Image (cartoon, rainbow, N blue to C red; front, side, top):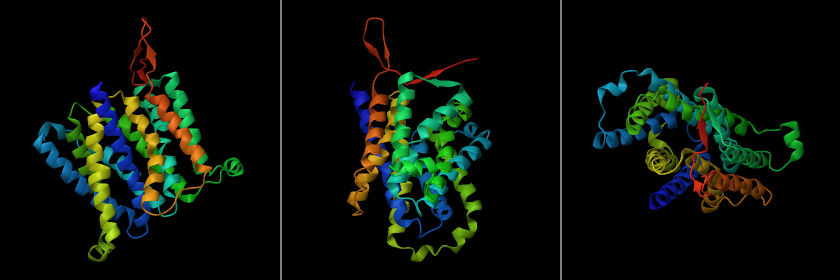
Length: 311
């Protein structure tokens, strides 16, 4: 019980730190090219994780026997982060966070396609409610906008990025060959940093790094240390103590945390009607955190919400 509580606390911190990247990212999205910022982010986070790997599991040569895997994973994650900061040039942070809550639903679809994982009924209900809450926020509770599918440019860009993020989770399981999580993440970050450096070289060279506003450096260090390296540690810590569905459930807290971040930064709160969508995502969280199976003696048995289906 104590281990589970610590796992939940870790994921609370995880969701709060991830939310910060939306609010801080929106502040600097127009100050620096997304590719340049995220290339630096990957290299800094990779250095931190590399030190952590050397201090714990080491970096065995056999872990890099198939480097193409890290290139694929680094590319997938790099696409997500670049599109996120591109989207935040125009998207409101709360709306972007709502788009992010669609990730578990898409990840479930990719999990079925790649791993033949199927969800439990309660998890499917939770994902549907969470998606409804996300759409409520994205379309700002405007039914006519929903029917006309009037989506902001930033939200549409970020949705494409979230597809990439959703693909990342099942791809880790498919491509990992027994490497420790810290080693696999280090390989992904190094490959992602290399790809982003090549892709964004012109932006990197054109950036006047010495004269960037202080807020850009604050945001860069935040996303590198807290929204990348620290969240990786928290995620791994929680994953060892909680079922996978319960770990994923905390994604639905992101819009709520973003509201608090916006208040803390003096940007004000969204309109009252938007809180209906935020409330729906909290309901989805509650459903996913509940135990989903019952033993024959009537006591509840924890479950991860995913079952493998072999054909």
